[in-house]
Image 1 (cartoon, one colour):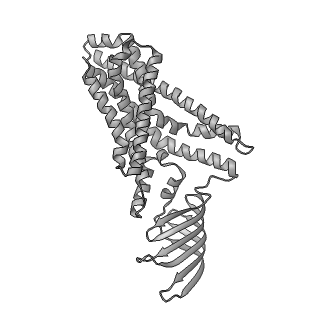
Image 2: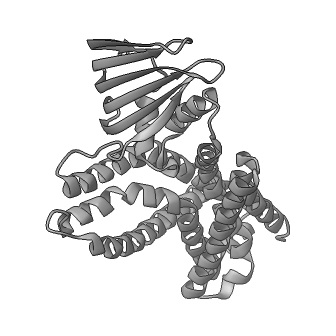
Length: 356
């Protein structure tokens, strides 16, 4: 009974301390983001809309800050327990280092689940809303998927779109058909394409076909069906940076890219980083156990924060450096995303095993 009470006490203290640190850390990031965003304020893009844009991006900022914030929060919590000799009393009462680690791990799992929920269901739609607020303020229209147009591959066809007000509406569509010998055999142009839930419908279509003998045939129609792999779920991914997408959206887009023999490493890296973030959150918490029983037992709160920030910066820089090097030199995305976390996890396990 006593062990369960101590387990809950440690877990609740770590979760509460981590959430407070996350709130403070995210608030500081948002303040700096608003200061930076205020430089773009105009008569249309007012300070209020800039503030709304920054606020809507808060879930993504919090998600990205989860590992470092939990590290600092846990350091403060466990460091405080060690400084007040509470951890020593717990060990004297029969609680082992493994038991304390188990309590911290329970808190880590709770925080990791919170990070998953934030990154999967809160941050992606909020990020899209933020982009809509900014685009609407600057253009007077609803945020476009791509106001400058884009190119996409669809099997042996290449699609050029002038603009996309949404993932279900494309304006100025040109579809270039190629045969297996990569020869242009036809061009289909349409003023607009709408997705009705079952497929694309082209409006005001002009279809041009090129014969092998050099002849040209042209047909016009008001409406025509267009079978394409460019589903709205695929196009909607273009709105948001890969790092801010949900795992399901990333997997959908990766599947589309690979079926069309297109480069997918950036999205694969974002996919594995999404999976690595909850593990990194748990790792940062476990890393605080050897620190709390070591040199942090007798230092002040300011020194604990400083040590936490230094470790967090080392993790952040190492992670980003390896991610970029992986993309440049062709390192497997799973290695680029997970290696820094696994190194810190090994350090946490080794440090904990050395405690006597």
